[in-house]
Structures are given as C-alpha cells and as structure tokens.
Image 1 (spheres, rainbow, N blue to C red):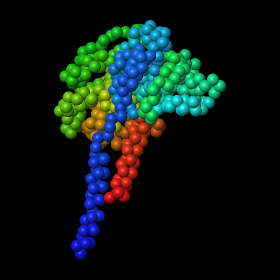
Image 2 (image 1 turned 90 degrees about the vertical axis):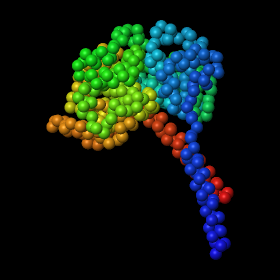
Image 3 (image 1 turned 30 degrees about the vertical axis):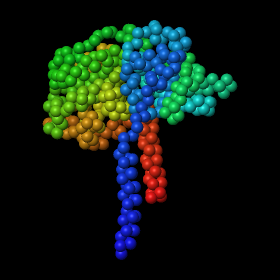
Image 4 (image 1 turned 180 degrees about the vertical axis):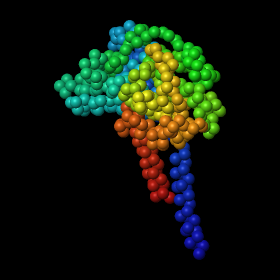
Length: 425
C-alpha cells in the first residue's frame, strides 16, 4: 500500500512541475519585436540624408513601433541630393511622413524574393495605405523584374504614374523582420499633391471659437479646451488636414447614466476626443463617396492600427457614422474650408475599445422615426456599403495576420518544450 502511494505521488510531481513551467512560459512577457528603422539605417553614412528625413517625420515612429515585418526603400545621399521633390517644396511634417510611409512595405521581402518575381509583378501594400488617405489602392506599389536585364523596378499601380524607382542593392536584412533596399529615386504616391502645403490657405483655425460660434457645441468646446487636445488638432491642420465630427449639446444629454464620460481618466478622455477626428480633410461630398468605409482616426495613430476606427457610410441620403456600439449621423456643417472640415453629429461617438461591445441605449426616448439600431446594425462589418472586404483599410489585415501567426508560432514552441520536459521527467 505505501509503495502504491509513493508511485502515485511520484507521477504527480512531474505533472505539477510541467504545469508550473507551462504557466511561467505563457505568463512571462514576450520580447518586444518593434523595429527601430532609424537606428538600423544610421550605421550607413551613405543614407544619412534619408535617415534625417525619417527622424524629422515624428509621426512615423509611432506607426512603426508595433511592426514586426517590413521592407524599407531607402534613397542614398547621391540620389536624394539630386532629387528636387523635397528641395522645391516645403513639406509639412505630416506630408513628409506620408511620403516616407510610401517607402515602407508591409511585407518582408528578401533579395531572392525580388529575383523570383513573376512576369506580372507583385503588388505590395505600403504603410501609407493603412492611413486611409490613399485613393483606391494607390497606397501600394507594384514591383516588377525585367527577365532579360534583371532590373527590379518599383512604381505606383496607377497607369502612367510618373514616379518610379529602380532597386540598386540590398543594404541590410534581419531575416523575417526587416530588409532595407536602396533605390535610385524618391517615390511620390500617385495623386499626392506636393504643392498642397504651399497653395493651401494658412487659416490656422481657432477650433474652440468656431464651435462656440456654432451655438450648439458648447459642451464639446469645453471638453476640447480642458483636455488640451485642441492644440494638437490645430497643429494637424497642415499637411493632410483634419475632419472633425463634433457632437451637438443634446448628444451629451442623451448619454445614459452608465456612460460616465466626464469621469474618465484624462488620457482616456483624450483618446475619446481623438476618436472623433480623421487625419485628412474630407468635405461632405467625399464622405458620401468614401472608398474605404472603415476609416482610422487620430486615436488609431496613438493606440495602434486596426483599433479605434469609424465606419462611414451613406444611409437614407445622410452620412452615417458607426463605432460598433453607437450609430450617429452628420446633422450639419460647422466649418468646411481646406484643410479643415468640422461637422455636427447627432451622437457622442463612443469607441468599443473603452465602452465595451454592447449597444449604447440613449437616456431619452428615441423619436418614432429613428428607432435605435439593433446589435447587427451597429457593427461596422454589417454597416451599409460593407462587402466583406473593407472592414479595415488595406494593410491592416496583413499586419494583424502577421501578428497572429507570430503568436501561434510562440504557442507551438511552448507546446514542444512541454512535451520534451514531460519525456525527460
């Protein structure tokens, strides 16, 4: 009898040990795989000018902070100094960042990948496409290889695009994470207006004053002033501009008691306010015919690709905005002059990432003509105009799949280690 008990406890010890090791492996923090492109490129003096551009484009650092697999097209000093795109135009930081985003391919490409390109070439998404500011798929690049000369060329998928470049050499590679290729020219996205920052009127709009003058946005104006984010919005008026969706005063009164917007911590309140702003100028006509229904917001830039997005569609002749738990409509134009558009909206846009996934029911009875949408209607994936392929701007899905694949591989390694430990003990 004692020997049986001893045998049972002996078998239990390896199982307990195995379980403890498994928990430790799963709960231990995963190493950060973020890529510091500027640090990598700074070791090559021939790219000092391009590195300086990357450093000056401060919004780009946040975009790259969570990327784990990409290819960079860098222009050497000898070619960049003779390129007059930058010299002739005083680009704003946001405009410069968009040009450089076009040089970041959201896919790891090796030199052998370029040598084995099919005759039709390969369409690759760039970081610019994920911003939602590129028309159609013009935030992507088409990479082709001449089968006779072996020359690899990169150009916009737009027909007759004047901007193209030739791959010169492989500069640096960290297998499956990052590759840096040198190219002989700066690439300008198709339709990108380099003259915009020079010809655009420098209005430097006082957003708070514009809202107060609108007579129906006092609550929003007060929140913006108190949070300090309004200064950031006004700074973003340059470059690609901004589009703001500002709730009318009644929208705040309609919030149910469960939504304690005013008691949120300052950082979360700032995220909610940024969730109401697109980092591009969209007049009303553009909103009615938006190509990508799921649009990133300023909160997306702070919190990461794929999060804090707005679904924009046209419903019954009006522009509708869905957060997944709230559906609002554009009720009026407060201000519309390039590069700033401000629209009044019927509801406070509450992001799911902060307020959960359940639909928010208004504190006041709904008008008979506007019943509250059900759970399916509130989902961006089922909003009007969604065809199953536009739930996020092109490029978001590639990044999410790569992150999911990386996590799956880590679990597989943990599983193999556990089996090995079990066999040993």
